Length: 176
Image 1 (cartoon, one colour):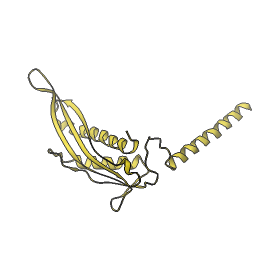
Image 2: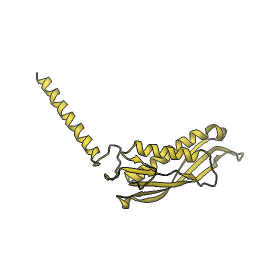
Image 3: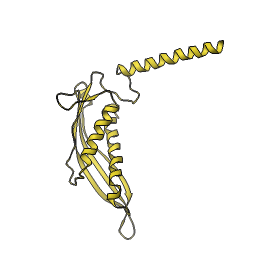
Image 4: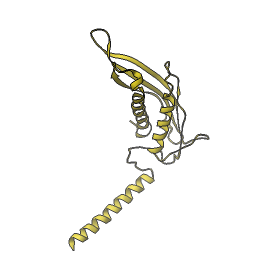
């Protein structure tokens, strides 16, 4: 009988804690992702990121633009809008797409190559102007020089764009 009473009490406490957690996240007081989004903000406009790098990779703009839009909407309670004035606006361009040899061998051939992607981002919040920023984010991935870039480029772009999007989200909403 005492065991059943303890289980019921534990169940009530668990329900109460879950309810409080839901209330905190619904009110914008706390997010379990660590995000600090102004509670008044409901909409976001993330523009298409044109590739303005000296070397243009044909699919990079679309891959990056789709990924950043999907990530920000899925990780927040914001709704993407494509026209009108949004509560939060993110614009920018791809500013760097560079392939360089690294780790030279004794015969002056590269043992490894590095793909570097840079993205210039402008973040504007209607409700929290102090959080506005303009910053360039850069990430890279290395691959064995014995492997042709065409064989690994899609995977490298996928990895790098994921890292860039996470960095931008952290800067925008987790205030690192």
